[in-house]
Image 1 (tube, rainbow, N blue to C red):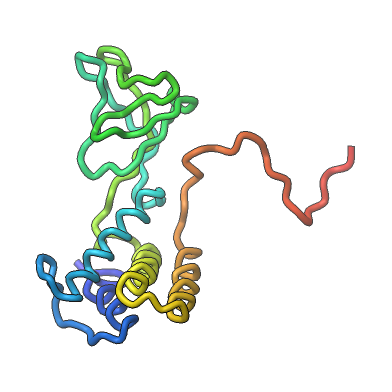
Image 2 (image 1 turned 180 degrees about the vertical axis):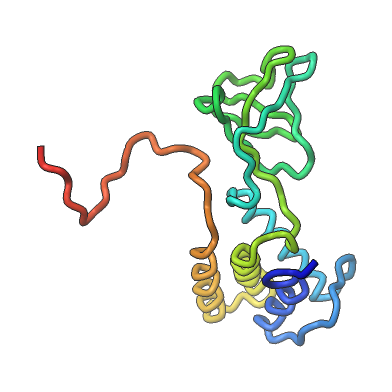
Length: 192
């Protein structure tokens, strides 16, 4: 299967070039080299970026059934959840692998209860869309440059590139809906 967009190695090499280091021929995943450090930063940035929720890693309205104690657990790799369907008005979060009902301050959903959640899961870097890979690689480059070199000038350049790439990624609706509509500045409001 062909890889679309950046490979993980290409992303790491981009990060290395941002701090004037030579590119590497292979990843050093478990090593202690600067390339291993760059890969670690890339993995951290990928997890943080995906936790925001993307169209490609969000499953909407997934049903979960509580166990005999009324507890709902999720699989490893789930980064975030939001109430959906009948639970849309509930504020929910994850505590470890347990779905917590913040609205009622409990993790007990009732013995055998079925709840519906919008679920954000982590996708491996290779399986992300090309636009997401670009955005994550650029965001990781900013973080890596700050941790490795800390140059304010270089930071400005890499931040601009990261913002450009972030505009290309499809984002789902916000995790928390707005409580009231926000008027658009510059648009004419209907006359009453």
